Length: 120
Image (cartoon, rainbow, N blue to C red; front, side):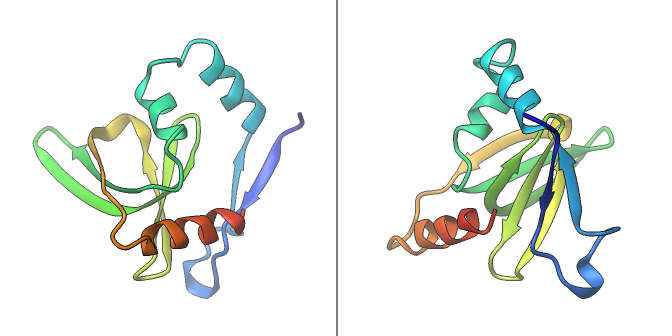
């Protein structure tokens, strides 16, 4: 499979460069199927579409918390979708300390996650 450009549905001032995140999905799939089995990356990739809270270690002692729908897992990053603000945040995979998977409330989170994933 050739390298693909993933278009995030960004608009206006949120558009970083051209709104494109380049990633080679076949490379990620190969990595997950070989050396990444049992890793955090593989666990995250298998839970795309779920609502999560992710704690990142910034510097030596600063914890930053982000919440959203796990939209995409790349080789060295994840993308979280914040449905409340309709924004996407690209996050460094290697700064992740903790990931909490939240239960959907009333099915609405699952419906949002499905609609978000259909945009890809």
